[in-house]
Image 1 (cartoon, rainbow, N blue to C red):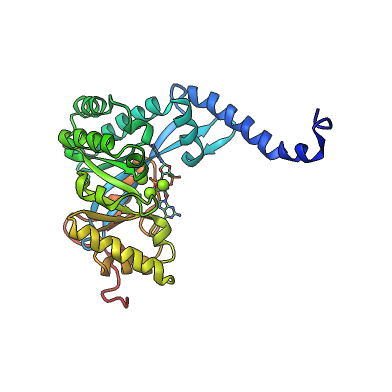
Image 2: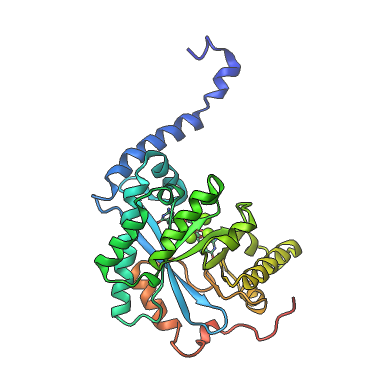
Length: 295
Ligand code: C2E
Ligand code: MG
Ligand code: MG
Ligand code: MG
């Protein structure tokens, strides 16, 4: 049949595309059973205050270990789960697991009580979301102030009025809202003053070259200044070096997460890292940053 359609057409159905969609179908089918087969897990990445060295929160990130294909990145399977609708049950599983984990950590004396959970735009548009959040918190006995929901700017792009109402409902429960990957979504800045947002997470694409690229430095400084003026806190994502951390610290960024401090780890390992590297009342040796930094 390829011959009938001519040579040019044949190129269009490249082996790569066929393989990719076969993989997508395979993953979609496997994902439907992943939860019951115990293939999903959460890892946690500590969020560190750049001024005190204290733990300010833990971000939960999903992992999927496929029995034959190994680890599948959330960047690959979350979009599939969104288009198939499975994101609602996976997202509920993530929230339950993360909230129960934080409750257990609080009982064990972890020096922060905030867990951050990523929300898909599909979850965010589900009218049942506030009830789900309330139920998960009630079941675990975790106060709402201990849960931070990470949204992306895209949630407001489609229908800002509806997005604002959902944020108000979530805010009314007492949970915190943060904007993930801030700066990548071209969202209207007027949303920032109207929506009940607590934290801006500075996207790692701006942090990566902060030591060398004057434009990235300018963008990051502007985000921090704007956040402060609007009384929002800032967390920088993807901080990998001392230099990046020092720049962020000296420009007033509140907190950071990234490989410089700790990569996302299974719960026991994340907890052990916190016990070794952070102290409730003093900046730990590991986290001491240069006192003065040239801008
Ligand atoms: P995100 O929420 O912006 O998470 C940050 C990503 O950067 C994570 O990738 C994390 O492992 C990675 N990262 C952390 N520190 C560093 C660093 O220093 N350098 C670099 N290069 N990367 C770092 P991950 O875990 O692969 O997650 C990718 C994205 O998938 C997340 O981006 C989030 O959008 C989505 N995701 C992850 N878990 C969930 C979930 O439970 N639900 C939903 N809806 N989305 C999720
Ligand atoms: Mg996130
Ligand atoms: Mg992010
Ligand atoms: Mg992201």
